[in-house]
Length: 420
Image (tube, rainbow, N blue to C red):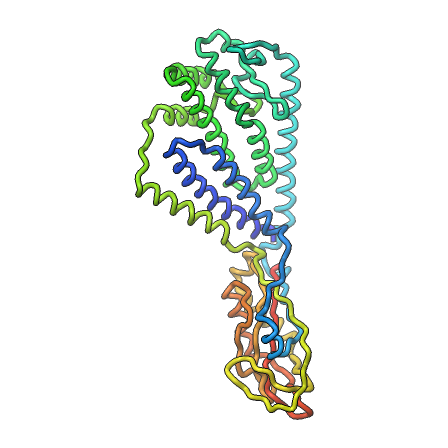
């Protein structure tokens, strides 16, 4: 179910974004770059939901040969509710809107690349502070290009006293391969444009890349911090490049944050702060990794067993035990049970797209009544396990026979709840 999977992806991305905030603050406390943090957040935010769909389903292992020899395995029941959930009706519109949004973003990116290629044809080549640059009329300072990144400066900046600092900043972008990193991150967002956490993480990645570059420039020119801040203000007042590339200029709010980061005294790390941020980081990552996916279902398959015939008398205990039989029991009211299971499917679990397989043990009496039920293998969702058990009272079996004599036997009955 697309809607449930989208909600799952947004929740996981949000938890990873919280983890990113904690990790970034931990790294800033020790004056380390934080660009890699947000790159990891974006990759995981797209990768974990994608893996939940693409990962091969491994059949769950049962309790072994001993279990197989003590119970009779009956044909499984599958409860499919393809038309029961309102959210299923949203699948087609959501897919159409998703494809349209991604197509628009990819076409926009393509047009931006074409504009960049056309613009580069009219830019002139030059050298500033010993570094080859491209000189434009009013674009830049920025890094233009992904495969062949080049520093582009506007004409007015060539006459500025701090022009070499602008070149140093853009050169740091080239060395860090920020153009390639941001292009790849933007592609991830374009493939999942409905995820607000991905957009926010991309914005944090852009900001982190700029702050990291600022720190490296100030480390190389510590005595020119004032000149560098004035350059940022001057470039910001003239507006940023229109091509969406790594650049010295930023919107006013981000520019203010960069200057504040450069001028604010570093916060000394304390044990309490480090512990709090580390705890938040671990909790958020754990929540993202273990948050149940919409298709997080057990895949236990019924095991074919040999129906051994012996002359021993049956001994009924509190747990599954083998009883000799020559005729296995059969469920008589299959359709009634399917209807009952559909009604018992918890609505919240169903609409979230959660399914699973529950392997249930039944003790069937000599008259075909269910005397006892136990969970042999959980679906991983207690609500589904309880739903499977609640229908036991209405199940009707034909009794098992051992040489024409009715006997009580344990049977295993896999019940699959399928929201798709």
